[in-house]
Length: 122
Image 1 (tube, one colour):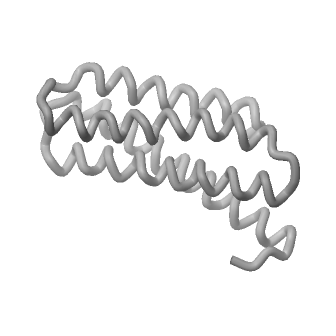
Image 2: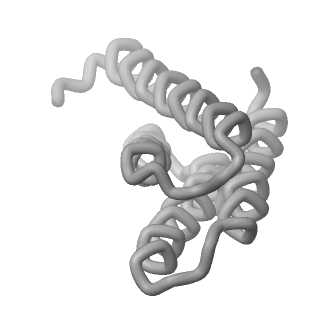
């Protein structure tokens, strides 16, 4: 997958999450969870764009770690929504959870590869 394709994929993820959240019931508890998920999912897309502009291997790696953390946080909030059994389109939720899980796997693998390739410990 090219950087451009991954940029588009992370942006689509953020858009899909936003559209999903816009359909959820409105109350204080759901609003708090929705806001957290909105922030983390949009951060995946925004920060991946920054990754693509990394100035050095260290800069690239540090920014990629942020993207990985935000993708994992998004996955947490999606699973949290699932666990709370908030009324929603469960097929859509499962689709977005699958995408979040795949993004975490992609970014985690990329971090591991970069560390191994550049002999970076920790």
